[in-house]
Length: 337
Image (cartoon, rainbow, N blue to C red; front, top):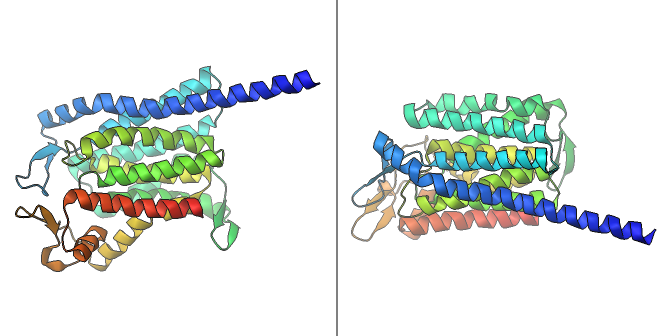
């Protein structure tokens, strides 16, 4: 009897060690594939004229405008590795849920490509992600019960599947696309988001959500090398939309929507400030004398403008670090709750 228990114990240890190694491989796959393909993507985009002006620099250099494609490639490669590990090496997770999540994310990714190339109207951009959630709805991913802080678990029934899931995908995608425009801020905040989501998924044994989160985390960490100040590539809507969508997919599959909501609060605050001012399209002004960004005419039009106003101007690098720091504060709150 003791021998059987000891044998079972070692089998469990070996299985856990194998699972941990597999998850690490998924993270590393996203990282290295993105790191390898990003230079080629950036070069090809420049050759094709897919560039944007970095307006917060003195000479306004042109950089690749859709560098986020390299993240999409790294992310897909990591997910494909996870599927191979599931098929051939018995890494256990719900393949249907992960595939549904992947399809939803790729639909949003394709929408981002069209937006970067042809500029989709904001009203259309707000609605299209609702349809991207259809794969998640089709497989009834997650559970209809959500844990609400200070209230407890609430069962939303069919309303969760038909309304909350598509709304979550649409809202998260658009919010992360709005708090953008500074070297490293979208990617840096995204890294904090998926680092937190990965930790929550891990401690709750939500392997499906963890795989998707790790794939995105590894890809974003690699791309930060090219997007950090001074940026060699912008993420573009192709990545900005994808970050929010992927977070929505992860928290829905992992059933920790409250964590996702807390992680999105900086973006929610930014949205409310922009909504109050009619969603202006102007940018912070770069002053070449002191190298700082200032708010045009002192009018606050978003969270970044609020920070610049309160600090009486700030360099782009420090503004990005501040935005990432704010995201870290909400990440700590999410973990604590």
